[in-house]
Image (tube, rainbow, N blue to C red):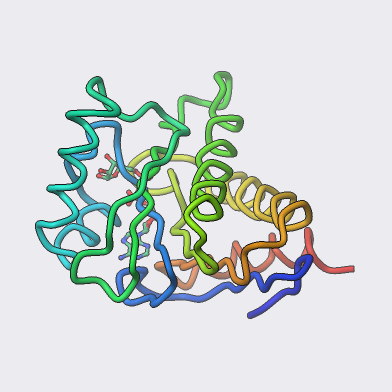
Length: 184
Ligand code: AR6
């Protein structure tokens, strides 16, 4: 399913993000940048050791105490079809009384900014924070779609943003959200 947003295409697909051939895929990482389960585990498994090596270098130089929630960094894509991996850290859901929504927005926004800063044209996101980190997907999908929409309306360098949803249910939820936010 595709939507036109500004000059760009916003696409929703059901699938595995490690198979996607965009300039960058985004990893829903944790602050350690040392890998984990879920989409993080899948990216490191398929991308191979080069990605972890670069993450270690980032920890040793730029972020010795770990990557703060909401920030983003970039490595190569290793053996993946995508040329780069942008690693961001979404918030752990703590009931919505904290700053989860703002931090989730920052995770998307900083990933998009980094892609533009590196001259990339296409980027794919998983549903950040809605797995192990427990963010309710109905709310998270709204933040994801709105943040990308606001970004693409101001910034015309990106050509395509893809949301890659891992299950049929997640895909349906994102689709309903996108229709309600993007349909004119
Ligand atoms: N492609 C696309 N989406 C996927 C894939 C895949 N290959 N695998 C899982 N998902 P999660 P989080 C979906 O838990 O909630 C890790 O251990 C999954 O179904 O990967 O941000 C990290 O190291 C869900 O909808 O990320 C962190 O410690 C979505 O991706 C922590 O989990 C996000 O689920 C981050 O938790």
